Length: 270
Image (cartoon, rainbow, N blue to C red; front, top):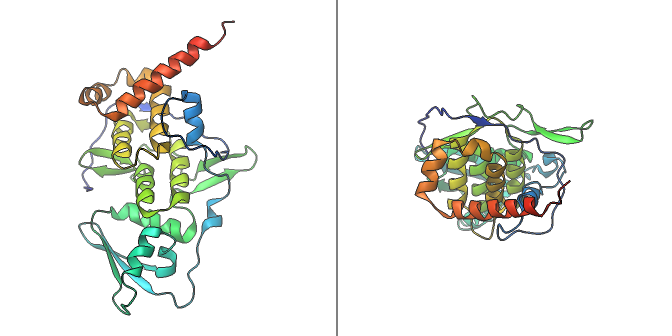
């Protein structure tokens, strides 16, 4: 699924807006017929509590599970009761209930770096780069400054191109049934800056391919991002090629852009 090859992007980068203190939002969007302003609110609906409050301590005597990850079969070890916070791993461990030794779960299609972050979250309630709260500004930031340029941790290199690591983590959290991790990964994407246009488009396509239609938060994030940075994207050769290839992403983008124009037309003139 993932390869270690990297390619250098030449297109201009986009500095995303820094996300301020998030507010919880009860409504779960099912379409993109709302205005971009409303769409952006969906992106910021993770709770404002510190991720460290979700950290898990294994109980005494918890079984150790070996996990073989990726095509290279990189080995990880984790406590069973920690893994069982995920409905996916709870089911996998249940299948090995009668096995007293050599409890093992194979994840051949998972990326080891992504799984390492997920495992870190299960134990510590967060993953690198961790969230930091500025009490004076009353806002969140990433411990490395949130700059994706030049940091190998920010993207996962695939055959399709670089994909934001937080996007992959969000999609895998969907698979593993970790709703709080999805919220965390979504918030972190809103704190990233300096992301290449081509990386955004590749990540958006990945998000569409790996999330159900009923879970539109991550998709809405990318639609809002492209609309905000439309002046940059309209000059992007990658954007032109992607639009010519088509897909549901660009139909949703068209609907969101039309609604954005309607919002502007309805504003009273000064």
